[in-house]
Length: 358
Ligand code: CUA
Image 1 (tube, rainbow, N blue to C red):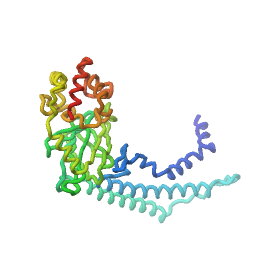
Image 2 (image 1 turned 135 degrees about the vertical axis):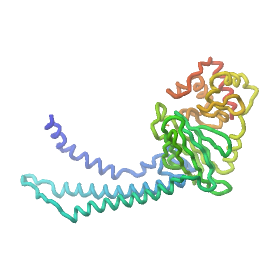
Image 3 (image 1 turned 180 degrees about the vertical axis):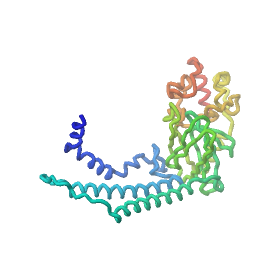
Image 4 (image 1 turned 90 degrees about the vertical axis):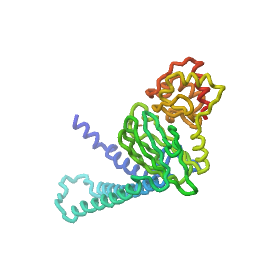
């Protein structure tokens, strides 16, 4: 058996596969790394760290290129030497003599100890400098502070400066009084470890229960950036998406003004509102201006100002809301919201009410 396996690996095709694979990897199209389509305003449709739109993300990309370059160079030199040796020193057909055995060479051994040590040391210094630049233990001057709370499986965004809470969509301004504004996030978790990551805006940072982390972003371009929980946190980890919108200043001020107002009170949907207030919905959700003041689930005060529901699992359309209110488990199996077992009319009434929460 053993012999058969080693015979397979000595067969000509397999002897060639490894070097060919390595060479193709080395020559792989670098554009593949930036495969995410980029919109005009700099936003990508899928997360990519190769199109930074924020200062810390730029610093991270710079250091990544340095590491890629150093590692790429080492790879090319080493593979080149290996391939050269394979051809230059391959055994001649009828040669059965043993190759010369060479032991110990102080200059060579010194070189392959000192050079890698120096490379690692340089990379360490550069990385340490970048980490010090990115990690800010206190909010930079004039920053907008936002508290991010990770929940299974959605994000809460708390704007203490303005006194409102929203979910799953992080909205920030590009400037304040015409000047770039640092965004200082305080990261907390309500249950397990999550990880906040919007690659175009900043580095991945863990969101840990009973431990506060901070993250600094400083957007350089308006746009909608996508991100995702980057630490396995349970069944619906993959559907714990983040939409981060960087607005021009006036647009952000309009968004803040809207979010500050209490929920729209529309008499024409009072049936749905009454039903909502009579069911267990209010134990988990908040709708400002009503009796609903729960904090386990997303704040719905301005639900219709958001583009997605279920932390990005589907877009926020009347049809999807109908399915969600009927039974959230259909769209997001395992999520914490149970079906309220409403009849068809009840679901329609509640959705008609939710659709007024602009
Ligand atoms: Cu939250 Cu993964």
